[in-house]
Amino acid sequence: MISIKVNGKSRKVDVVPSTPLLWVLRDTLSLVGTKYGCGMALCGACTVHVDGVAIRSCVTPVSSVENKNITTIEGLTNNERLHPVQEAWLEEDVVQCGYCQSGQIMSAVALLANTPEPSNADIDNAMNGNICRCGTYSRIRSAIKRASAAMQKNNKESV
Image 1 (tube, rainbow, N blue to C red):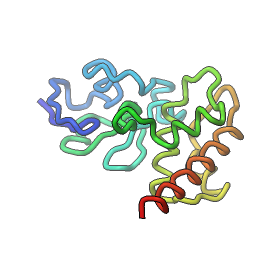
Image 2 (image 1 turned 180 degrees about the vertical axis):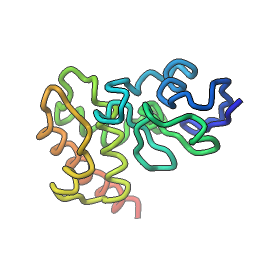
Image 3 (image 1 turned 90 degrees about the vertical axis):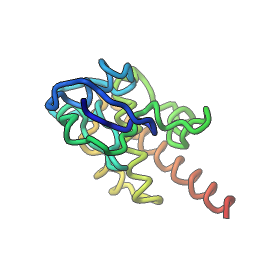
Image 4 (image 1 turned 135 degrees about the vertical axis):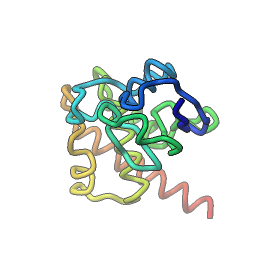
């Protein structure tokens, strides 16, 4: 048994330690928002956070995240309220086919946690490796900028 903490809940999973985290999330825990893309950490569709850091779950053995905090796309909502990045995604009409979007959003959330007011270069660097076959990159950048502004406004209002 391997102990992991996913979206704030402690879970024990009975899997081979080398099983990729992606398959534990999807097949064992039925958290299917995280997508399988390439299986080689090249496309970003499988991005989740481990202790706040964006990682590719398709190549991460579940044993390497034992007793760490894992956040999936399902864990971004707060009391049924979308994360500001998710709201910005909708407002900017980013999604076309949608397949890559959970990975894109998870990478964007990690970026904004570390760089609250990112430049275009910051966004390009953080999002590098998240592939969108539909080519919505300019809308992704706009959504990240919108989320950044909303988060800055919320932080000022809560002070």
